[in-house]
Length: 226
Image (tube, rainbow, N blue to C red; front, top):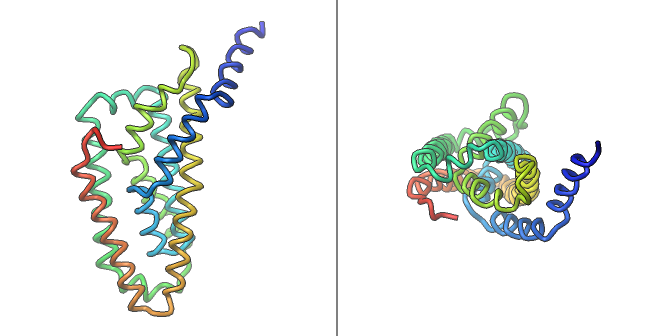
C-alpha cells in the first residue's frame, strides 16, 4: 500500500540531497549571481526607486520565473527549447517591454526626483511587482535555462513534473535572494545621492538608459546565449 508512495519520496529525497542538487545549485548560483540582464535591471530599478522598489521588482521577477518553471514542468518549456518561433516570441516581448520601461524612465526622471519623498505604496507597489513579473516571465535567458537544463537533473522516469517544479523553485528562491541583495545595495546608493537632486536625475536617466539598452541587446540574443 505504501510502496509507491515510499518510492516517490525516495526519488524526491535523491533530488534534494544528491549530487544532482549540488551541481544544479552551483550552475544556478553562477547564472544568477554573475551580473546579467536580470541583475542589471534590478540594479537600475534600485537606483530609480530605492531599496523597496528594487525588492518589489525582484518579487515580480521571481513570480515570472516561477511561472516559467510551471510551464517547463508541464511541457511548454520543451516548445521554447525546440521552437525558434516560440523563442523569438519570448525575446521580442521582453525586449519591447524593457525598451518601453527604459524610455519612460529617461523621460520622467525629473518628475521621479521631485516626487522622491512620496513612499512607494498602493498602486505604485502593484505596478512595480507587475513590471518585474512581465520582465521575469518573458526573459529568454531563464526560460532556456529552465527548459534545457532543469529537466536533465530530474532522476528516474516518473514524477518528472514534480521534480522539475522542485528544482525550478530552488532556482527562483536563489534568484530572489541574490537579486534582492543587488537591488538593496543599489537602492542604498540612490538614497545616498538623494541630497543632490541633479545627480539623482542623471542617475535615474542612466538607469533608464541601461534598461532600454538591455531591451535592444535582447533583440540580438541568439539561441546560443547563456
